[in-house]
Length: 571
Image (cartoon, rainbow, N blue to C red; front, side, top):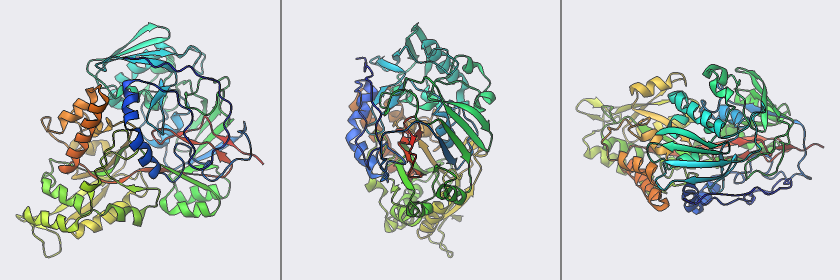
């Protein structure tokens, strides 16, 4: 397997970019995973940009808000969060608000180009992958340190990966990234060899995530509670100075930081002096605080707030999240939903374009597959998701579901009534599901909405107490399908281990051939839709708004945010 070596060249500060800028200079990385991403790049890039209301990976402050000069150092960015980052440890957290804080504190072995999906160097300057994708050998740069002064070396990589593996399900995302993990061998201080018991084609992409971000060795021994409270020490461009649970998190620039990702916009320390994250749960208060200059930037922008923010001179930017589109995931062990014809009829009866046009904005797009269009490996299967009310009613007629006196179909005395369990991690979810509910009534399906809290959701999933789950999951790799649908993983559709969908799910995770893995991912997506094991509705989009003074706040490949290149323009 060829290694990837891309010596870092000095870079001068980059001025603010016009709308839809070209991607930053990239250093090619001929690893198998990079090649896989590159093979999908043409499709991914076009679809990704089509799903953006702003420029590719440039976020607020670069969409129609050109700066008057070179980037400026200094200032405190005041950022409003919509949801409480209950855990600051990116190795444990799964929510976007938590990860948007944690990303600023930790670096990763690699990075992923948000324009192409290519894996590029960061802490690792090069890597080799065995032909069977069971061994990954990373060569590390020798100048990176944690904020406590200890080196970011192979021993730290070993301690972190061992620690994440030990967390198990406590690491919401990491447990799937390290499936089959055996050990990390310290070959020498700058060389770490990661070994798996089975092929893990997805692992290289996983090393670009903040979930596998690196802590100091001492931090890996802390309790999970202390780490959630931000007690860990990272090597990132910012350090945590204060955290007030359910209120705020304060970060300050780390002096001497000099090892950014190879696709960063500049070298050296971050431009911002500090970042103040504030929890502002009420959307109208977030919007008003930005418009009145009490905040510089906000996320979780409601669809109804996009135009008012633009009208008041703010910049609104959006990027489609990679991973699973927002979908109705069926419990195939449910008495009604086990019927494939019912699942397919429900999918046919949903008018996805109407959902986007009625509830959302042009920042969002209807789903065209189980994977979003921003995901390497996405296959456009929009024809399988076409709105067809006549087809849905005919399918239900043929399956023996007869129209009832109240409009709800029945079969053998049982009403065609199903529930969907959802949480409000996306503010528009309830409105979306209410519209879907109205659409399904026209086909004779009674969809009942059941909201649960984030704390209640794991138990609902564990017990299968649902007919459908309203679900999405962000990850810029097609292996996210295995995480959600695999019989050995979360298995939210609750399919048996011998179900035909499991074979390509497992095979793609082990496949080292680029073309073969793409074909397997396409097979999985087709299988899920043709059998109604997934009912995708829309692609989730991260929408952020900023004042015109904010520049170069960037979307990562995961559509989460990086503040390293961000700067504030002063008058």
